[in-house]
Image 1 (spheres, helix red, strand yellow):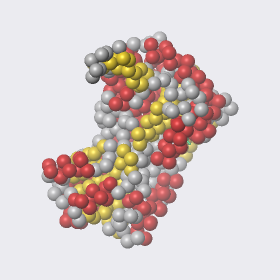
Image 2: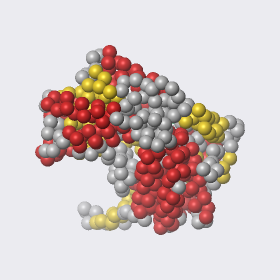
Image 3: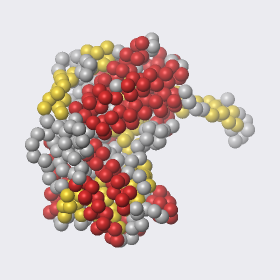
Image 4: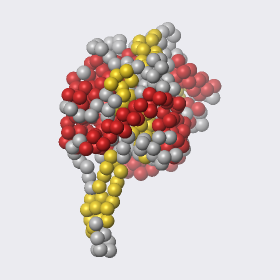
Length: 480
Ligand code: ADP
C-alpha cells in the first residue's frame, strides 16, 4: 500500500499532535500493533475548529454544482482504491475482506448519493393562509460541525457524516474512533488532495484522532463557533454529548445503540429467514448497531428454525479477515470477547442450551465462535443488552400479540426484522414495531439513499436519504 497518513489533518496540512504523542492501532486478528497514529490534544481540536470556522464562508460560497463534483470525484477515487481501502479496514477492524470490500462500496455510496443531493437545495414559496403575504422558505448550511464516529464501519461511518455535511456547505472536524482511525485519515486525504487540485478550500475536513475523546472534544462544545454535532456510538456517550450540546443549543444527530428483534412468524419461509438471519446476525461478527440481537420465533417453528439456523451458523468459517474464505472475523478487542463470553455464560446458567459455538477461540486474536442459543428467557441479559458479537439467542413466542410485546419491550428502537408470507402480518409488523428501520423478509436494511436512524433511546435524526442533508441545514423562513 502506498504511503498512509497517520497524523492530524488541520487546515489542509498533515502534522503531529501538539505534544507529538502517538498511539498504537492494533490488528484484532493478532492483537499486534500495526500503526502509530498522532494523538490529538484539546488544543489540537481547537486548532481544527479554527480551521473549520475559517474555511466555512468560502465553502458555503462554493456553488452546489462544484461541491457535488468534488464529492463525485472522491467517490470515483474511493471506488478505484477499493482493494487497498478494504485491506486497511480489515487490518484495523478485523472484518473479512469480502465484507470490507462491500463496506467500501456502501461507504462510497454516501459520497455519490450526496454528490447527487448537493444540487438539490430545496425551498418553498407559498401564499400565507391570510392571503396577506408570501412565505419564502430556504435552507442554509448549519455551520462548522463536529463528527464523532465508532469503529465498526470505519469508512461508512465517516462518509455517512462527511458527505452530507460537505454537500450542505458545512465544514467539519471529525474525531474517528481510536480503534480504527486509519481509514478516516485516508478518506480525508483523498478529499484534501481532490479539493486542492480543484482550487477549493482544503480546511473543509479536519481530522483529530485521539485516545482522549472526552477531554479533546469537550472544549468544542463550549465554543460558540461549533454549530452541530453528529455522533454514532453508544447511548451512554450520546447522552453525555446531548447534555454538552445543550450549552450552546447545538443541532444534534445521534445514532445510538440498538436491540433489534428478528421476528419469525409461524407462516415464514424458514429457509429465507435463515438466510436473512445469517446476514442480520453475522455481518461484521454481529458488531453492528442494526445487528439482530434477539430472535423471536413462533412456538410452532422454533425448533426447525433453530436447527436450520444452527446448522448454517456452524458451517461459517471463523478466521482472520485477510485469510481467503474467512466469513466471520475477530471481535474488535479483548473487552468485546469478555463481554460476549459473560452474556453466553449468564444465559446458559439460566437454562439456555448451546446449539452451536458457545466459546472463544483459543490462540491469537479476539475470536468468538458464532453461537446459537435456544430456550433463552426473555429477560436474560443476552436478550436485554446489546450483544455486539456473533451470538444469536432464540426466544419462543406463542401469539402475534406476544411477539410485539417482546419486540417493543426495550428502551431501544433502531432496526427490526420480520419474516412472514402473509401480507396482513407484514402490514401489522410495519405498523406495530417500534423501530426506525424495519426489514420485512430482508436481513439487511442499510442503503445510502434511505433514512437510517432510530426511535426511543436509539437516537435522534436520520442519516442518508434526502433527510441526511437536512440534518446539516437550517431552515429559514421569510415573510415577503
Ligand atoms: P462503542 O461502544 O461503539 O465504542 P462509544 O460510544 O464508546 O461506542 O464510542 C463511539 C465514539 O465516541 C468513539 O469515537 C469514542 O472515542 C467517542 N467517545 C467516547 N466517549 C466520548 C466522550 N465522552 N466525548 C466524546 N466522544 C466520546
